[in-house]
Image 1 (tube, rainbow, N blue to C red):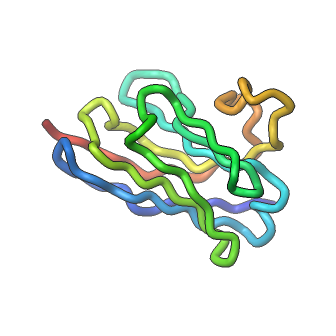
Image 2: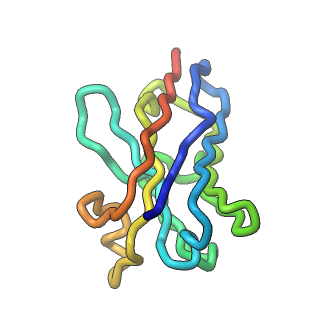
Image 3: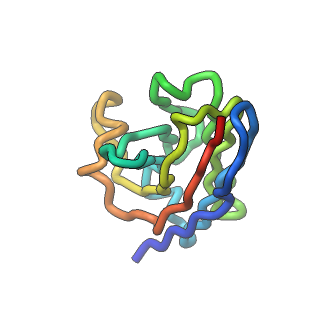
Length: 127
């Protein structure tokens, strides 16, 4: 059973930065592709970023490219999401996710294919 525990959410003003962390069970990163998803208020959950077990292939939603960076630390069993230049529209509950790596890169953000979810951490960006 994979356990994922997010931390690092909070409230920040527009233009600010936050780093989200996800503590994972041992060996999770060697088996699964990891990702961050978010659910803005009143909207559907959406993919934010993903990373493969080797840490060398990443995907980002167009809305966060150039501002967010996903990374993982195998030694610490930790996944990160560095978020810079935050905007009010980034306000959402953010979820860490583990999934079997997709056969097609276009499926990286398919939430239906996620095997394990964290409990979420709230990010609120004020203007």
